[in-house]
Every structure is written in C-alpha cells, then in structure tokens.
Image (cartoon, rainbow, N blue to C red; front, side, top):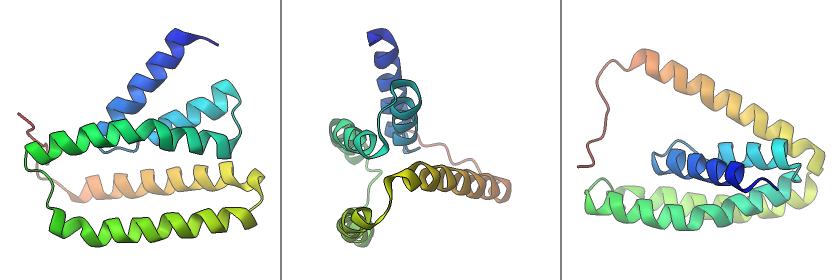
Length: 129
C-alpha cells in the first residue's frame, strides 16, 4: 500500500469533485486499475469518500449563493429515486459488466462535454471569491 500515492489520488478526486467534474471517475479508476479493487467495492468506497467533500462544497457554494435550492429540488428527488432504483437493478446485473458500463458512460459524457464546449463561446467561469 503506497500511502503518498493514495493521498495524491484522494486529493485529485476531492479537487475535481469540488469543481463539479465528477471526481468519482478519478477515484474509481484509481481503485480499480491501481489497487485492483472490485467495481462494486470501489463504488461503495467512492460514495463514502464524497460525503465530506459534498458537505464542504455545498457549504461553500451556498455561502457564495451559487445554489438555488428551489430549482434543484426536482433533480435531488430524481437522484434519490434513481439511487434506490439502481441499487435494485445492480442485483440483476452481472458485476463483470459494470466496468464496461462505467467506461461507456465516461466516453459518452466526455463526448457530450466536448460538443457543449464547441457550441458555448461565452465565458462560464465561476467567481467564488
């Protein structure tokens, strides 16, 4: 177990997640590829890792008035229902398919992000100061 590498992986995951880029992708890939962690276990570790990150980021974004809670309530509700649904769905999916599904998801999201960047010329930087 290489503690400095684990600290760097955790730091990068936290950094990326606090910017809303899905740091779980970094952490899950690190756990699976470099630590040979099974996919389901890596997902569970990822969920626990992001609880403190999400709380801290939510506090900071709330202080900076970057969150409109009335607007995001339907998204939160949908996420809650989706989480419950997927936990039941996982029981019927062969775990060997999970890395493939995750890889396809990352590729599709990356492709959609590139398309969005090409069509979005304005400066979307967020000022958190």
